Structures are given as C-alpha cells and as structure tokens.
Length: 453
Image 1: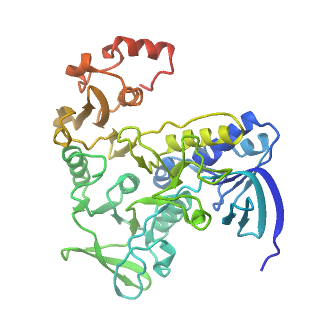
Image 2 (image 1 turned 60 degrees about the horizontal axis):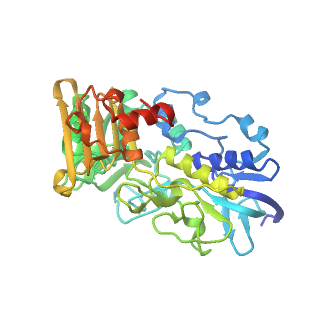
Image 3 (image 1 turned 60 degrees about the vertical axis):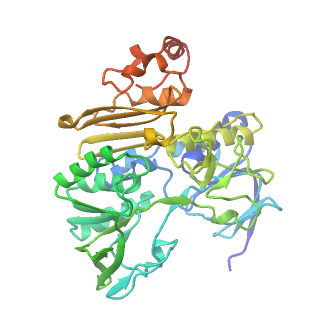
C-alpha cells in the first residue's frame, strides 16, 4: 500500500468538465489567492463532451475539442490533477483520499463528477450468451472485444481505433435516445451502415412526437440502415473473444461486429453514499448548489435540480446548465451570493444533413391537459417540421426539424416565460421571428440580455 501523503487546499473540485471548470473560473474571479485543486480520473486537460461524436467521425481534431487551454490552469493558479480519482470523501474531517495515496483537506468541496453510462447487462462470456440483469460497468463484460460506450473522449478514441484497425463497415447501437442518435450521426458520417435497437416504440421517445420520430427514422432507412423499435438484445453471440451476432426480442437475428451501448447516463454518485450527502437520482442541492452537508456543493450532471417547466426536481444532464450550475457553486463557495433558478431540457442532433432541435416539454400533446395547445407546421417534401407547445399562452416546448435557424428565439420565450397570446396565430410559422414578438419583449431584447437567433 502506498504511503498516504497529506495536504490541504481552500477549494477542492472533483471533476474537470463543464461544471468543475466553470466553478474554478468563478472562484478565481472573486478569490484571487485561495488554493484551488481539481481532480479528474481522465488524462485529458479538458474537452467539450458534446463534441466527442464529432471527434469520432473526424469532423474535428484533438486541437478543437478543448474548451479551455492548458494555460487557463496555470494562469489562474489552479492545480490540475489528471488521471487521479478521488476514492473516498470524509465530510466529518473535511478531507478526501485519492487512488494515488493522497489525503487532501479542504475548506470547500465541489462534487462535479458528472454521469456514467447505464449498462443493461452484466456479463458476456463464451460463444452464445444471455445479456441479463442490470449492470454498472462495461469492464464487467469480461474483456469482450467490440462492445463500447460513448460518453467520454477515451471512449471515442478507443472506438475510432477499433473501427480503423478492424475495418468495421457496420455497427449496432443499443438505445435510440440522444446518445444513440449522436452515435448514429457519427457512424453515418463515417460511411457505416447502422442498426438502432430501441426498447420504446420510437426513437428519441423522451423528446420527439410520432411525426418527428418518423421523419428521422425514414432518413436513416433511406441511407440503407435499420431501426428496430419495441425491441432489445436477448442474447449476444461471440467468437474468438469478439462480438459476432445479436438476437433481439422476438427472435430477430442480426450480424454485429461492433455494438455501442447507449441506453442512457446516470449521475455518478458512488462517492457520496456513505457520507450523509442526500442522493436521489442525483445529488440533491438547493438554489445555491449546496448539499445538505456543510461546505459541500455539487453541480452539473451529478445533481438533481429544478426543472422550471414541470416544477419537479430532475437530473437534466446538458452542457449549458452544467456551466451555469458550476458558476453559481463557485461564486457561493468564494463567499458571493448567487442562485440557480433551474433550467429545462434542450437537445440537438443532425442525421444525414437533417438538423433537429427539441426544447422543453416537447413530447406533450393537447390530450395531456386542457391548458395545453399545440401548433404545427409541416413541409414533408422539404423534411421540415415545427411543433410549438404552449400552456396558458406561454411556450413550454418545441420541436424543429430541417429549419432550425430561429430555435433560439423560442428558447428565449420559454426561458423568460413570455405571454404570446397576441402572436399565437403565427407561432409555428416559418417567418416567425423577432419582428413578430410581443412589443415589450422586443424592447427587452434590445436593452436586456437578448437571445441567440
């Protein structure tokens, strides 16, 4: 066993992605001298997680995936510990222990450990095997070649290498949600044929309606690929340590030389369970990003926070909200007062040149509630579809396929809870833009923060 070395820092941050880096940056704006240490189990200086599928497909290189330069850390006197996992948190002593034999005391602690992929089976060994039972780690698949997750840059690097070294021409994706569709986007760009296997009745079921799902499904099929909905993997056949064949529920058998498991991501809360920090589908935090333990904060994909549209506490794992939460946490850790008022879901993907954006409660229909109204515009020949959902004359959700250029305007309407009763007649029109907005809100855009258009 390595000898334990001891040290102390004013601010200790677990996680070097959107929330952790945003917190460190905001701490340093307020506290110019306090010690800041960031710990990351990964060996990359940093990278933008939404871009990993673009790295996989070759759209961008390693020089364009970082969102902060290496000099950011030295310039702000931040100690960055890479390839170093925090293995234990002792909140009573205000210290952590790492896998490198360090014990570090802290004044304030931020947990920004992000999420980890959900693995729906525990093991695959031998020639013909059942995929059964909920699991947690891809490494439990017995070293079988050809099965990957795709939630971090190391996954993308390994996946790209495997495709090149094994001349892979087709791939299967378990999961038709956002991660699955982003993976499909990358594979299609690389010229691979794909099979998408989705348990629900349609792809992107959490954020798409039937019409939007069918538009993208048809585009995938036109490219010579397949989508199997209402299905999952019943068994996996292997040969020589490599994946070879999948049997789906219902008995359908498909050849498979590469499988990406993309059924979802869950908050990586393993560190907190033994130390009294409340955890329920994510670490529970207040508006200041404080946990229920003194001097311990949490931010980003590891948390459960306020969904402004549903009024519920949810895990909303998207990059812009992680940055915002990290900023709020950092300011409060450094002694300034800041509040996080919540956010809402926003998803963006492009399949074979067709861009798609969903905002907020995008899957709702008028049958959901008597207060809900849905407005649609369709141009099937152009693969253009717009759906705007309102509640009491305020936009609470939207889907854009094809023509997405003004989605930022609708995001602003949702975020600012603008009464649009005077413009409802044209709310889903292709010409709807700033000129059609309510007069008071247009004035706000000129003198206030504005929205992306």
